[in-house]
Every structure is written in C-alpha cells, then in structure tokens.
Amino acid sequence: MDARLLKIEAARAALAYVEDGATIGIGTGSTAEEFVRLLAAQVADGFVVVGVPTSERTARLCGELGVPLTTLDAAPRLSVTVDGADEIGPDLALIKGGGGALLREKIVAAASDGMVVIADSAKLVEMLGRFALPIEVNAFGLAATRLAVEKAASRLGLSGPVAVRGGKDEPFMTDGGHMILDASFGRIPDPRALSSTLHAIPGVVEHGLFLDLASVAIIAGENGVSTIKATR
Ligand SMILES: O=C(CO)[C@H](O)[C@H](O)COP(=O)(O)O
Picture (cartoon, rainbow, N blue to C red):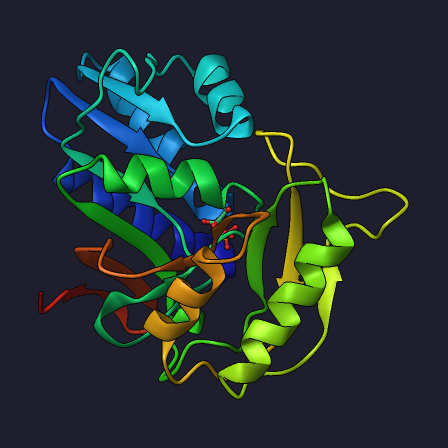
C-alpha cells in the first residue's frame, strides 16, 4: 500500500482517542498532518476540539484548516497528544525529532494524560538507533557541546558521526531558535543511560529519546491497523 495511505489509516484510528470537547496536543510531521486533516474534517462537521500545536508548521496547517488552537500556558494539562515518530522500539520507547520539533513535542507529550503515536509499520524496530538521534542544542558553544556529546556517548560504548543538521553554514533552526545534532550512533542498547547522559551535558536542550511517554502506538501496515499498548 502507498506510504501516505498507511499514514492516513493510522491517523484515522487515532481519532477514536479524542473525545468531543477535549483539549489535545497535536504533533508534527507528515503523519501528524494527516491527523490534522482528518480532525479538521470532523471540526467542520461540528466536533468540538482545541489543539496545542507542537510546532509553528502544525499551527499553520491547523489555522489553514480551521482547527481551533490554544497554548500550553492557557491549557497546561491535555487529555491526549497524537504525534508521529521516527522509530518505535520496545515498550514504546521512541526516537523523535526528524522534523526538528522534538522539544515542543516532548513538553506537550509530558503535559498529556496519554500519548498516541501514529506510524506505518516501517517505523517499528527491535532496538532503537537505526534512525540518527536528534539532539537539540543551544547555538552557543556548538562545537564544545558536540564534542561533549561524542565523549559522553563513547563512555557508553556508542560512537558514530554527530552532524549539525543542515550543515554549519546554513544550520537548521528549531522553533525555539536552537540547532540540531543528528547522532548516528547505531543501535542503542540502553536508551535510559543515553538519555540521562545527554541531559547532563550543558548546551543540550533536549534529545529525541521519548521514554515512558507513549501510551499507545497505532501502526498501519499492509495487513491493516494494529494497536500496541505500553506495559507501564
Ligand atoms: O518527531 C517528529 C518531528 O519532530 C515526527 O513526528 C517524526 O519525524 C515522524 O515524522 P513523519 O510522520 O513525517 O514520518
């Protein structure tokens, strides 16, 4: 089946997790955008929902399609967030940030009672790390932070290129004005150790390991849509 159709099927199934009248988090990326399109169609039919977007890109699409928005400051607790992922590993540990929105995505997911991940089956992995791990960093001291990331990773037995997204001359900038390092460490046997190690580095704003956040993953594949629940 066409990759876009799989994304649409996963997004459609996620609508069941959104109650009429709810305030929800809305993710970023091509799969999340399919969800926005389907949600907008329901809003046009009278469904009541308010969204907190996880990026300016998502906010724009919601605005264009008529999905009402609010901010996390006005609505600090959300019933659910629906978002995509770059990788889905054991017990719904995720790599996110391929679209560069990982900081807001993580803040919004953490402010939600549940996180519903929507993806096609190609995103399922037995161990995280095939997708380069996005690490959001402050622009100040970029080279030092990058070196610190490499050294800290090597203490955990991880190595591989750590690239500035977009390149040094025209770096990708996040909505928060930060830069992204894409760390190709390969397989990550202990995501928790890597998470706390990265959090301890000054200059690292956030990283794309989403641990203990996703409650449900809706996976669309050639044989239909399946649901995986976190065991936590
Ligand atoms: O984390 C993300 C953005 O920061 C996206 O959810 C992730 O990159 C998946 O995107 P897509 O649905 O386009 O494959």
